[in-house]
Amino acid sequence: MFDLDGKTAVVSGGGSGIGESISTALASVGVNVVIADINPGVSRDLCRRLEDKGFKASFMQVDVSDSQSVRALFENILQRFGGADIVVNNAGLLADSDILDISDEAWKRLLGVNLDGVFYCCREAVRQMRERNKGGRIINIASAGGKLGFPYAGVHYCASKGAVMALSRQLALQTAGDNITVNAVAPGTTQTGLIKNRTPETVRYIESHIPLGRMGLPRDTAAAVVLLASEHSGYITGETIDVNGGLYMD
Image (cartoon, rainbow, N blue to C red; front, side, top):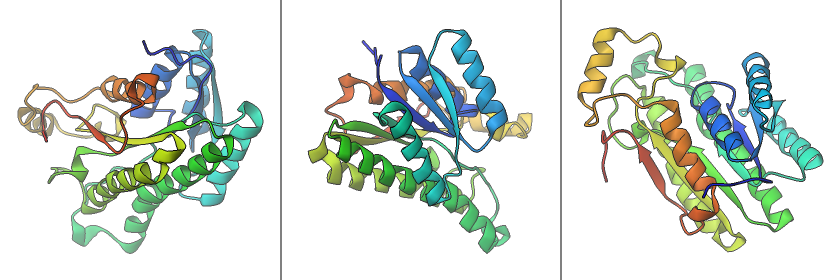
């Protein structure tokens, strides 16, 4: 049902955390996965592990907050693989500072990755997909924090994720005529390295507010991405898929 053999996907921040699960899930259904990450160590290690399983994966270094780095990434993908069919904008930073503790630099740094990075990658993806005239899938990773007041998340983080969902809706409208679908996935609190410093009391507090009684796993978000990347989601665009165990329902 989800055979995507022959497709090429680029996953920003694809070397660790949720991105690692997304890269692995796409590779497992036949996708040629380009792990686009700022960290070469974990990304190359993931590529080796995927290749050892017989999957197709490669690493390209990128800083998504730098538009020239993003343009070079997509040009490289075009030259090596003929272009990207699926673009997953997953790279992001998490911060939970009080507003009075957020410096100008911290605000710009987080928005530079979480929002500017999504914009730069979407712009290059649309440019490339329109030139190829084969349609495509763009999937942006947002957060439940972009929809509701979210404990242990800073205002800059929540603002960035709310903006990603708005960007996804408007871009979906602009690209529908090109057979390009644009959707977002909004995970709730997920067990990744970004929350490894949470105390047991904090973890219990978070889980007590989730109807399904547990935090998300990276593979939960990856499953939604595979669905949206598949041919079976061709009539879904401009949507945000909530993957949060019932924390937020609409």
